[in-house]
Amino acid sequence: MMEHDLPTKNLERQLNEMALVAGRKRQSKQTGFIHLYHDEQEEFQHTIPFAENTWFILALLRAKTSEHMNEARDLLDRLLHFQSKDDGNFPIYLHEYPRCRDRFAGVQLLPAFYLILVEFSQVVGSELKQRLVDASKALMRLILNASEEKPPSYALSIQIGALAKVFGRYFGETHMEEQGEAQLNQLLSLGLQRAWLIPTSIAEICLALQLAYEQIQSSPWKLFWNHIRASWHQSTATYVGPGMRQFQQGEQPQVTLYDLYLGYFSQQLSPRVLNDAPFHLQAVLIRPTGETLQSLALPYRLDGEVDGSPWSIFQADTYAFSWIDKTALQHVAQDHAFHPLSLVWGDHEQVHSFVCQGGNYQSIDFKSGENFIDFIVNLAPEFKVEDREKCRELSFFFDVESEIKMTIQGETASTFDLSEEFILETPQMQLLLEVTLQKGQGQFLGHVMRGNRPSQILLKGGNRYKSYDWHLFFRTLRRSEDAQLKVRLKLKPCKND
Image (cartoon, rainbow, N blue to C red):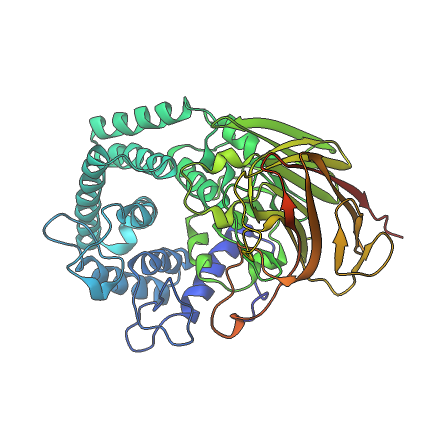
């Protein structure tokens, strides 16, 4: 089956078919298991991951043919033998048994276990059903105990709360169900959290809330539902919220389970998300709740704050942007995936972006309107002119596009002075960037060259030396410690003929 040769009339069936296709592509004829190594995507993979095989089993059962169901029963029977007799955990990869490295690994498995029990208990048979019930009970005990010993992250806590609620009800264990409900309510009371600004975490929260409630949009988590609606751009089918942790995959934003969830809620999957990928196996976890993400009335703006850092989202029909102050990065390890400013445009086929990443500054103060973004960059007091990287005070990246024109003050150039206007023209958008010295003294030089944004994930193997972006940056020749830069970015969408 080709990458795009998928059913389109029934979205639920399409999601299950995606999981089946992804599983078959990675299934070994010798073992019957999916072989996949998460850290490397080599042509030949030998490790057998437990989670992906569990999701594949659910996809086989959902196919509802006798052949698929027999295969699912056989795989489930074999996998359950790898549960640790010491604490009830499962290994991440089967070859690691009986060593289980992650006490929360069961959070990846239990949603599929639960759906198998409630949807296919008669299909799997009484003996296998009881083994699955016993395995789920042991896993839940382990995870709840581990949560008390070491509090998990916010998104993981929501998943554990949802699992405790639904499994407590299924097991008839009222205390577990009430514990899960109380945990969800406590997390809800915290309001907007960093995880709401991270696409992969949004997907984890959606998965949990779909288990715990009939519909997210009619649940107590309506604020979360409204937020994911505000941070999803229908025209480009991509996340446009504050860039707390977002990665770039080649020329476009990385697609993940988040894109499947928001595509399902929007009732349309973009061609980008249909390209084969291991995360397609998780498509089987998306419950057909029938809830729909209504389109926003454009232009639309939403302002907020997280951990003392202001942020903003703006959406127009053909483009969208967001910004967030760098202070939100405190205690966040993956700063290479942090975007203080992100602008996207394009369509479902191709998403273009212009982002601010990296640089030697302490904070950025933003102000924006429909067609402009102004910001003051407070540079770090310490700087090293002789350091090739650290002298780059401010960096922007935009993906390489064949039909673009770059000029400085109307002329073609790759080096320019501060205050000279940089103009980027594409078939869909024109950007005008001007940087001036707001405070202090200094001399800076602007450069345009090929490069890669820090959030690029494809720089491995044969792509190790490939450049997917243009890199626009300003470096210091000399300056005072109190120097500030003022940036004005003007946006001019191009009208289609």
